[in-house]
Image: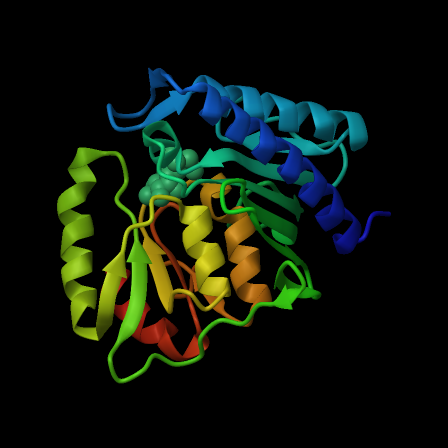
Length: 264
Ligand code: IPD
Ligand code: CA
């Protein structure tokens, strides 16, 4: 049976190949293929091509494993293992040429549902910066050879927090009200445009915390494992796991205060 480390190694290899393809397609020029849930929610040909490449490699190397990805139909596993994939997280950045996007690949066991699964491995790779964040369950989170640790407690100047705004205009007023509620404890706010990178940056201590409503499983699957393996806490509504209603990630010292302000 494959260990978490074996799964991490395969996810790294696939993420590197996928990232190289995404970057090559970006250099050749990107056009928007379609809009999805809202006009702001776009997909490029590259998103689809990169997901197909990832899917084909998983099918070849781990037949029977399930697949849950942003751009194609889910497939249930005949094994206990499912791959949760965002081929390009940060598609709007990608389309505009902003170099903040990432391939996000997680390997989970159990039910393919973020409320239930157990994440075994997670990789977030930005092919422009070359940074590859990785974690295997129980083995820590790393950027290259450097072991990652979340920031434990915010300074007197407040916490550097990131968030995002879903594509559905009906939710924007609530998102903005949430930002207003966290400002008293924030040093400043970032909106990077890739949930996977937001979570990787919390793991790396580049952000003190992150929160967002409306995420899909593939947005947070890999990044959440990076944060917990870096000693942080990830959750949703009080007592809940991260999901569509809310995702919160930060050091343990900040978690309850941040949750009280955003998960109302
Ligand atoms: C989006 C990004 C963004 C977040 C959105 C996500 P996509 O994913 O992660 O930062 O605010 O909620 O949907 O569409 O670029 O894969
Ligand atoms: Ca995404």
